[in-house]
Length: 248
Image (tube, rainbow, N blue to C red; front, side, top):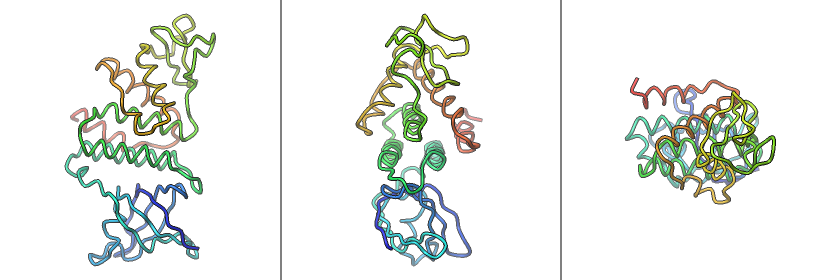
């Protein structure tokens, strides 16, 4: 049976001389691995529409052994990402996160919206990349089933104090009276930002907050460490991005 769905190419691999094996994050089917016949041919109408970070409408059918994409109409290819190696590396990191945290055969509308909004902001270059990175990491974790307990202090139920403490290992927060020695000190503004990222109903708004540079560094550290503690896989794209951003 043939299905039409909108989605984003998050992985691509050349098979033989001209075929492609791609991983698509689709609205309706979640993660889908599919073959694209003769996609690398210069005459193929699917050449750009099935390349990495191409967002489009895909016609998919189930073949004998795997899914096959027989038609693809591009909507956005995020060309500007190729003009900045740092932003391209960050986009590749987001794609790897999607691969690890996404699910097959499950509608993935929200996860798709998160990464599409992030890629759009990376292309425009008008938003601090630390905000984009932290928001993607924490919201994708929530969508992948790893939402931290950030509603109140895990021990006493206190909603807020300044500072609060984020426990990476347990995935919860503590007030200033209940903190544990291994929890990360987090000013109230940082906890408010984490709550905003996790709980906002409007995906497009999870990037719409501001913090001081000091607090943004704390937020970045918490989100990255929490993600690393939950993702079962080597994040090679994160290592590469950090080598670029640190000027190594």
